[in-house]
Length: 45
Image (cartoon, rainbow, N blue to C red; front, side):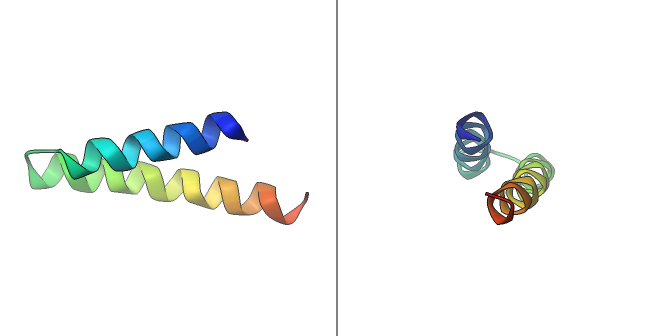
């Protein structure tokens, strides 16, 4: 769980400093997928 949270934070950071629109959108999509996994994991705890 901590690994996913750390990866999510890293993706958001990379998206905030991304130079191109496509790059930023791609990173945000990856972060959204991780957020979904985090939400699914937290409901079963």
